[in-house]
Length: 327
Image: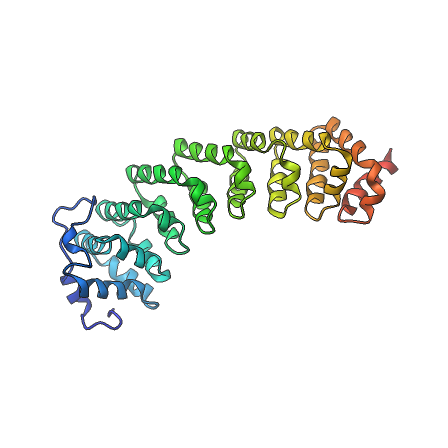
């Protein structure tokens, strides 16, 4: 596979790669910085990594490398933080770096150090974030621990970022360390109110609730207590409240707030384009698991049945009509 736009052959390029000299993956030697001596070599490697064609050939090529060749390649790629960022923030560069992760402990150590040096910019980038996601799958326990510490430190920044929230959600879903997973879940639960009102953060709260961890669902419900109706008026906020209705521990918090609201506000919520689904789900959930709460909610809604018929709340009106006919 030739490097596009470069006069080096692949054999020449890899013959020119620096030897690791026992590097264990801490910080790459400064003499390999692209601003120093190896400018042309770095340019050739950049072309190789970011070329829009030849991913299959790249996979075949690295599969043929021994550990020393892979380490020499990783040493060059991680020799300068700006250079590494330029590669991983490129769509094709990100994919190729992901293919290099998990090949050997020494190679992973180099990449781990490079990711940690620019953790937040990498993990909030559209393409580079997938390098972090992949690293959290293939790195060994010690490297994952170092990564988890950064994830905890920057969790709220990640959650409130357009691309960072996607990375954080994948990391939460695949987390295999019980201690760090609980730490992340607790952090999300404690900050559930600000995240639920954030354009990106609400997706993280939704993902955490989807795990159906009862302790975390309860903690999120406690954080949102008194704010569930406000959230239910909003598109993504209503999704969060609906998920809280799926478990008894958190359902009670939502329904009690509905019952304690004044009738006019509850009526407006039931007629709202998003809130009507919350009220409808509250009726269905309480009917299954708490009949007393169900009838309390029915009695509070019944005076507004005529207003609900001519609105988004028609589905709720139908439920109330069926109860009038039955009883």
